[in-house]
Image (cartoon, rainbow, N blue to C red; front, side, top):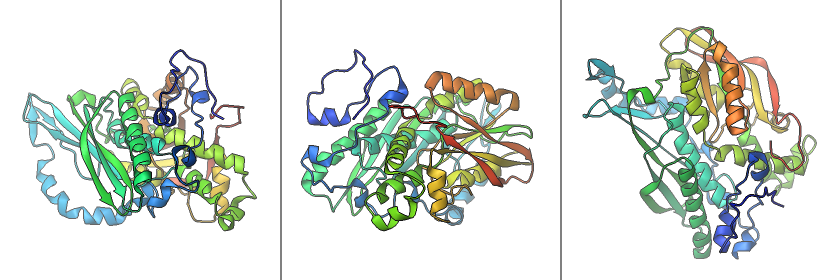
Length: 415
């Protein structure tokens, strides 16, 4: 059952769609995050309907491997070289940032403003279409937030309807996905003004986020210094949680992990993963300015290590990142271990979807940053490593400390 906190904002849902998509409003973010699982039969769909069956790859698992991508992008990269600081405003060079960064930053012809843009789309990774829409939107916006850009001026939605869907499935599922995407955009203080919808063998959902901003509104992620610490704002383990949840239906897979985890544990981890993925990194981004962040990126498809390495590569100073702590959705580290080398969670290679921000903060500011985010949002952030002298690489120590998130279960609360 859904845990509901009483609030005057609870209006009676008028129709089945509103009911399915109703956002729980209330004072305690932990109480309201527990959604009733999506029930296909409530929408006159077959009981065995699974949104994730409309694609063979899940979520950020669809990414081209990092080393392949870098090679493929070489052709695009060449034109960028000479342009690095081509534009000046009031004699100050305005950075031009493109390939390989979280968002592109293009100086405009007018008045010292820059265009910040990012795009992203992926395949269904959860069974609840409304939550899938929210997660997709949060994931698109995350790249802006990683650059310290907290305002989004406009969004476009990119949708592919699977050719394998019946008309009934399409008419139920697609509006829910769109509503989830739109609601998340509204939560971010922006609107969806257009996009593109096509037919495709696989279902895809994503979009474009655009902002016009002044130079002080973004943080170029290149200024980490020795002595900084690394902070992570969401737990790892979304890929493990989503897979474990799918295995509840697959006895041969389930038998491999049932020794380390109960069905209830897996359902709870799945809820936590959904809640985490749908949560905006906007507060995390806003606080980066307050606490003088030196660099940041968001942790998505290349896993914690992949994104840490990409961030380390783009630093001006000769630094390296060392990660000691891995905050992981409760019980998922054990599941990862039981699956042998499949996820490589402890090695930092497990793909995350709509993960947290990985931020380089001055040592003396980091604890205050974590405290502040907890106060504002009710969610934890963790100091997970350090910046030392090095050759612009990142590594995770041999036996990192796994932090179970949350540390202990609370009845009726997610975190």
